[in-house]
Length: 280
Image (cartoon, rainbow, N blue to C red; front, top):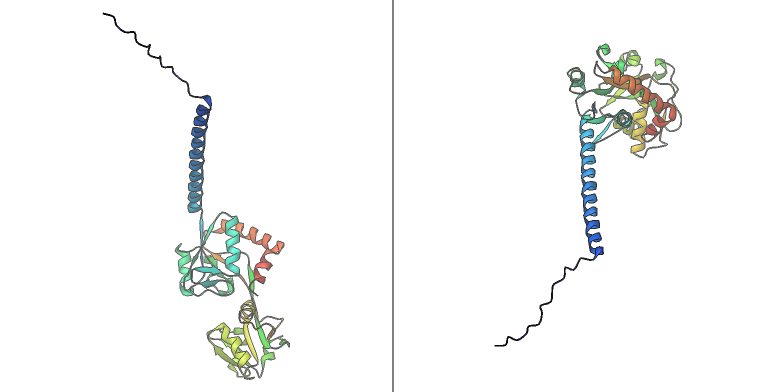
């Protein structure tokens, strides 16, 4: 019996992928690897940066609960002021982070000695037993002057110059240089509780007050903030003149030397004056 012939089955050929697809595949894999590597590097650097920031030494600066404008100004969680701005710039250059602590004046000295804070703004002359602490060079001068209304400055050469005058003073301040004048009633003091009140009473006191005593920078800041420029004049000669510094923990001599070097540069370059101009 005859078996019909079959058509031969075509042999399958192994068709190779075009080379272009292989190249694109490798390119995609390379791109993916590079992206993963870059992402990993970014995360690593970010982590290292965060770790560095967390590990940077901290200067814990007391700014007081209500601040001491314009030296330290506390507004909620925000802190500014001449002392704060100077400390922030210098600590940043020294590799420190600056943190604000709000401690009442009566507790600050003990907190420094107990290592709870590192620094506070203080004049040596205002400190009981200042030898217990380390002080930086003066950052700014605190000068108590006489303010008057108008353009005519009060000329002060000595206590006798205030004879017969009624002077606005800050409640609780002693004014030892004028004490005899006040005790003998040759001059009269009128106490007010807030720095702003000193200027408000002088401005709106219907000629009941002749003079006001206030820190010059504090006065300039209050006058600027309340739109009173041109309404007051300050005496050229100061009643008191003290250097406001950072008072530091007793073991911080090394930090004080570095701080002083940066502070000297800020003074010579005019940077400190520019900071002060923002508040007066």
